[in-house]
Image (cartoon, rainbow, N blue to C red; front, side):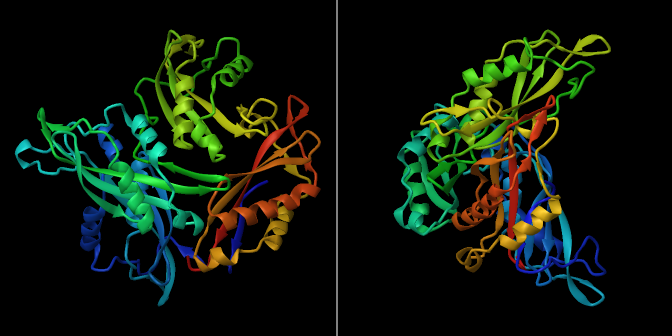
Length: 473
């Protein structure tokens, strides 16, 4: 199946890369940069890991000057990328671009630089960045466990399907105590209050220091409140783990790639034996695939473990934990000599029908990454997309509330081409999820051509993205 399925109120208008008159921020470029510098919050996790550099955020300035289609064109890290998008979403309306005298949609790319700057000790007062940032005494995972254990999703928010990321700011004092709690980004009054209540339960932090002396430091903690099909979940994008970076002297590919002792089947057996499905993700039916990156050194030892593709936080941490249990590999070779090679290992988390059983999705069925011939719709892809567009109905509540986004429905294409195990892989909203699931289940009476591996039909995971998009959004 190629492309994506779109549900739109009307056909999209042309988007210009360059117009005769380009869009302009109200007050000009200087005003725009003042706005960014005033509103940007350097993520604490990025500061602690000394992540700095430039991202490029792309967006479309519409005919009425509003902003849409915000995307990362050049990323740096998950937390910095998210902060760049957050600030762009705060922009006021632009003066729209014009072509032949008419207002038109124009693409806009904006570079934003993040740089950690040292602060002299005599100027420090409630600083945002210091040499050593405050830390929770037992680490970020322990902090998240306290939050998840004590958090209570407000009943009014849950009943009205209110969800989103609340950002709480506070000061970590010289003795590690917390004070000056403020809502930096609100979701709703009850969620805001619950986030502050739980943060006040946290133990004292290790204080931040500048030139060896404890100082007061501003700290920002984002907490995501999310409602899923069978429950709700809370996570914090402030929690960090190592992200993949380029390392000098390490090959991304070699003449002979590193190999797990005993081959691929042994590796899959190791994963299935050692991966434990995180209870918090299991409780709210969260699935996903994490790609762990590590370096296989000349002697086969593994080092520099990092996340190359993220999923839910606890899934990321479990994938990292298991990867670090791996034994030494057969090293990669370049021109006959052992060399350092980066290895990327995808680890899938898939809930099965068993009460407490979880599979890595390459046991009784395969990820499409491992299939030599993908499953295919028995008719041409264009026909399938037309069927879906014809059948889909934009839910009234979602339309009225301006809710849009891409829902991804996962299915299993069996050896005989039949479909099973319909699941929401990426959720947007309760009603959009339900409509996407309803439409994809219409495929159930139509056989697919099954995936083939080594000449044999096999079960394969297949994903159908459905993009719900409102006009002028």
